[in-house]
Amino acid sequence: MEKINKTLQRLASNENFQKRYQQQRQQVLQHPDIKAFLAKHQAEMTQEMIEKSMSKLFEYTNQSKECDHCESLEKCINFMKGYHPELVFARNSIDVIYKRCPRKVMADEKKKNEKLIKSLYVPRDILEATFEDFEGDSGRLDAGDKAATFLMNYEAGKKAKGLYLYGKFGVGKSYLLGAIANELAKKQIASMIVYVPELLREMKSSIADSTLNEKIEALKKESILMLDDIGAEAMSSWTRDEVLGPILQFRMLESLPTFFTSNFDFQGLEHHLTYSQRGEEEKMKARRIMERIRTLSEPVQVDGPNRR
Image 1 (cartoon, helix red, strand yellow):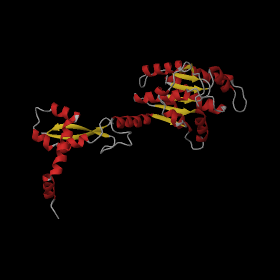
Image 2: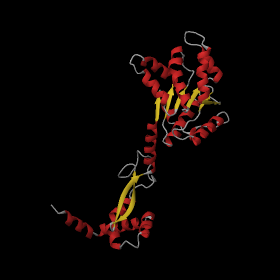
Image 3: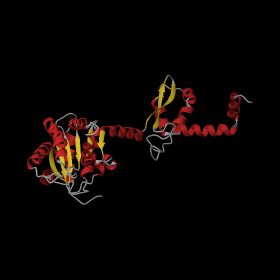
Image 4: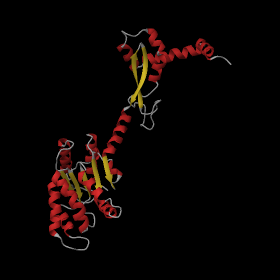
């Protein structure tokens, strides 16, 4: 068996090999990034150093930079998926290091942000909502502006008033909540979105496993709480007075930002809260809940066609 060094010597002396090598060498040296790099370090670099580093330079030119040759992160063509090469000059030699490419940075940021948004029973399209996809037509412009104002002024831990987004079914109220949550996550501010009808059903079942108080305490103290579709549930006196009431009372006293969406305006929600599943009329208890909601949030109508 021929030794590897003899094989390399034989190939190096081959005329076709030499021709191909020279062609590749010229292509590498004419690459704009390589030319710029060599020009930057010309005072400290010799021709011998460049020749010895030709394999590193070829490695660099043979890969995608800034995702310019990749359709997506999943279809990254580089040696290390999600990482692109960068040339460095150190200890009298040229080397290639790898850093996260723009798509990898965005994907990592998205994963980190998703961890900041806790949710209960909320559809994925709401959790992935963005302001870029929120159509700001005349019926939704005011809501979008109020949301943007909150985001611009809010700082983590700050006491602030949320929004009460109300309007017809399918106009984008819940989507706007998701967009707000994602913008908060970009600022490293955690939030929680909860679909109220399912939450109240879970609270009833939590009595049996003794986790009710723990769950109520968690909702009370969440830094930013978003209660989606309040008023869509069949409200019982117990869920109104023993679950919703204590959560809103604590958040009102602590001025913790709280957002709501509902098909009802304030008057309609108060009427809904007045009558329990048993048909009992309890105006005073409904007013107490509404007083807390009014203190915690600013009503904003969201209008427009049904987008579902």
